[in-house]
Image (cartoon, rainbow, N blue to C red; front, side, top):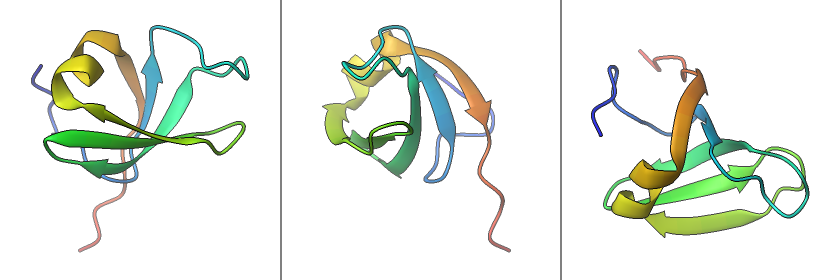
Length: 68
């Protein structure tokens, strides 16, 4: 999965399956070999490996602002 621009902390993404709270929007906290996501509705934080993330990824909703 190649994104342009690449996935980075602060992005908001939509996953294919909904979380138990009913939300499908997640904020990226860390993007590396593993991806750390925080549910936008309930605040639950999860870690998933990059391969699982790629298969569950639907689209990017918001791109993080550049810190420069």
